[in-house]
Structures are given as structure tokens and as C-alpha cells.
Image (cartoon, rainbow, N blue to C red):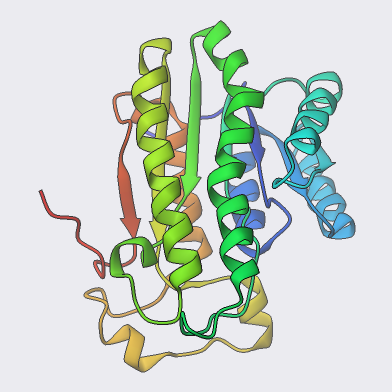
Length: 253
């Protein structure tokens, strides 16, 4: 048994970023053609497209501001015309900001997180789910976070936005399930990506001490779960919130 995404088209938001790049590569390794979304890092997106085409996959890069509805629908038009509408949608992009205690956090950070988590999900759904409904097939994989469960200090903007995202995803899963569309969330822990590898991996002993599997997760750990949920091996799984955090988060029944 293997994950086979041959003949499928995927769109990954934040595809040129640290985690996104590994997700894109993994989906391509499983046989999918991949549209790579980026906001500002065009060169990284185009370099990634070059990697994928060298593998024999169809790939293209698309710029979009995922916090702006018009920009999302403009990207949808370009994707449809130049690449083809996706069967798989990975909602991964998020705005980065400096984490501070709630009393010190800039108000604008709460808006940016809500826009890049909740509203991105709304815009991407409105743009790409109608096609999935028409073809009675779709796989939507959404990046959440262990922070949504742990609610630890200094991440109130991020946590509140991701908890709002969770509500949107669960409702959507119930609304589109009868159309053959699954909608699932992955909740990564503190994940090692290529950026950290290049700059020196933080051993983070205090954090690792709270992880039952006694290590930090990697981008490949997250990408592997993404590929599984994007495949027909997960065809009867929807509305799930799946921590990929080494056991640090264990949702209760």
C-alpha cells in the first residue's frame, strides 16, 4: 500500500514557505501536479516549480494576498486558466508576527491572524470548493496548530485565530461531505523546517521534555500526514483535528 496521488492537482497556500515547500515536494513525490501559492517570495516559488517539473510533474507558481477576497478570486481565475482546478487544497499560509503577552500585543496582530486564518479559509472555500462539488470529489487539508489546544502564554492572537479556523473547518466538513469532499485539520507542534536547519536547529530541551516521543517534529512529519489526508486512503475521514505533535496534544473523547 502506498500513497498515490497520480492524476490529482493540488494547490498549496504558503507553498513557497518553510513548511509549505516540504508539503509541495511530498505531494509531487506522491504523483500530484502542484500549484504553488506565494505572496512575496517569487524566486523561491519559481525555484520550487523548477524542482517539480524536473520530477515530471506539472507545476506553476501563483501570487495572491490570501487576506483579500478579490486577490483570491483573481488567483482562482489564473489557476483555472493556466493549471486546472485543484482536486486537493492545502490551506497552509499564515501571517508571521512577534508573539507577546496579551497586554502587550499590538491590536493589529489580532486582525492579521484572523484574516490569514479564518478569512483565508472562507475565501479559499468560496473560490475552490464549488468546482469540487461539481465533480463530487475533493480533499481539503488545513494547517491548525497545537497552540489551539494548549493555549499557552504569549500566543493569544495566533491561538484565537486558529480556534476560529477550527470552527469554520468543522462546519464546512458537514456541509460538503455529501459531495464527496473531505475537510481535515493537522495540528503541528513546534516543527523543524529547512530555515531552522540552515540557521542551526534549536534543541529546545524544555519543550522536548513535554513531548512523549521526546523530539521535535519535522516538516516531513507534517507533509506525510498531509499526503495521507489528501489521498483516497483517508476517504472516510472528515472533520478530524489530528495533532502531529509527538503526543504533546492528545484530544480527549
